[in-house]
Image 1 (cartoon, helix red, strand yellow):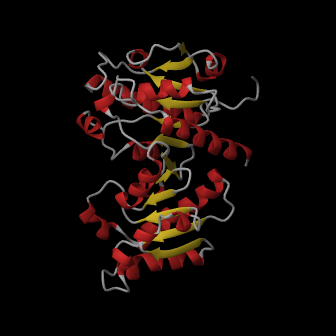
Image 2 (tube, rainbow, N blue to C red):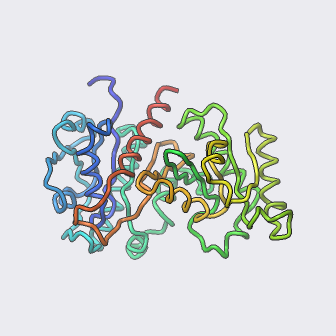
Image 3 (cartoon, rainbow, N blue to C red):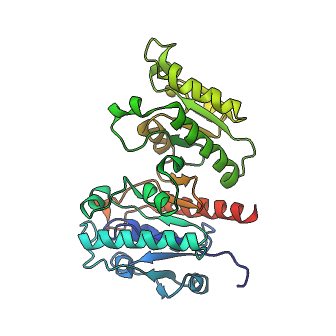
Length: 332
């Protein structure tokens, strides 16, 4: 229809993983989950290898809405070769990268209102010559955004978390933390909470790095020398920033009611509580981009691929969150 918002695009992810299955199951749940029109970009054979439902190939994104009610729209990109669910192949890995590239391009051009990225296997990507730490960094580069300004947020119904450092060894975390890095990540988070989530004055809670948030320097000085100065700078900028708090008391229900996002020094400190509370609903959202990008917060699950055992809940939530953020941006 004229004036209708552009559909969302889902990059299929690794064809041998559960990406094709969860994309198809999300489409099958489109009515009960009240999902907006979306289309998949990738090799259709990856879907037909694991799903017998209706599928319609399209030649342009604006055709997705025409067929969405009766079939899963697929824009063919890449050649996955012989698709064997559970057994990744080099051709499939290359097809996953091509699909990701195409999906980001469609979102940047406005042909898609947002992009949801399917799960990929980093080990397979690296073997194929992929030079980025993950899809987040790839999308950021394609959007012209520096890595430090692209923030990974994990969001569930009752918790949002942002790891300041992501895919590095735990031993490297203390040296990687800096006032500048924390301030940069927090500023992006605060802006995104306002722009994409509609929170007028976001409240940020900061976890300490050390047990008991360092216990006044007796268990480490990162809180005193790095995290507190960063919080002070943010408060001076007018951002509601609080902490640092002992991480072991930051994620119970009463504590979660007091903030809109928790900023955590390292990856597992953020992701363990999120996945404990919302394993089947967690969404990975990249903040600080000119486009909306989300992803289900799980991997390729090669061990169950092709067995009709994959849960589509996180993908459904990723689609819904992406649609809501895109609508807020369009109306602002």
